[in-house]
Amino acid sequence: MVTNMNAQLDVPAEPDAPVELFMEFANTLEYTRGEPEDSIPTPDELLAWLRRHELISERARAAEASRLRRDAIETETRMSHFRHLRTMVHDIARRVSAAQTPTQDQLRELNTILRTGLHYHQLRLDDDGTRYTVAQVGDRLDQAAAAIASSLAHFLADDAPDRLRVCANQGCRYVFVDRSPTGRRRWCDMRTCGNQAKVARHRARAKAKPGG
Ligand SMILES: [Zn+2]
Image (cartoon, rainbow, N blue to C red; front, top):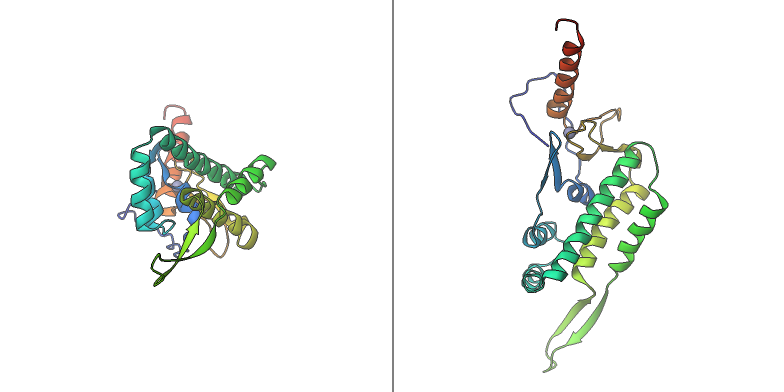
């Protein structure tokens, strides 16, 4: 999303909507005039993102970072899982925003990610019997992926799937939720994308005019 603070259009500001986790994740691949920019291209950046969104602890972030640094194959597997999830979230958002339902394959994949992220807790007592700890058993990165998938699942089931949008600007594709009263928002930001779309249409019309 491009912000242009100088744009002075008589468009009312959109109310601040709570940002869903799955949206934030989808938008880590952000397009500006069709050019993609990945804000989590490396394992360290992905782990920092997961940490910032409280999907892993600081200890887990450091442990995963050093584990992945030592294992290139594991790193590629993990990175491709998260990229795959991101593509799927975006594809589902695009379908839902076009009043379609997710495909059977997409539902199956989403449910697999939710199931793979299962975890359970275990109570442990220190060797000297003085201190209890509750350990979470299960793969931390799979759990983080499941939390993102869960955010999408709950949004579709419990929130406002008819308000899910992918920015109508083809060069943008930002995922957002339209919480406006009328529900007619088509662009991620009327002051930027809406404006760009208008400018592009205007140019196209000017070009089409004979001698223009
Ligand atoms: Zn946009």
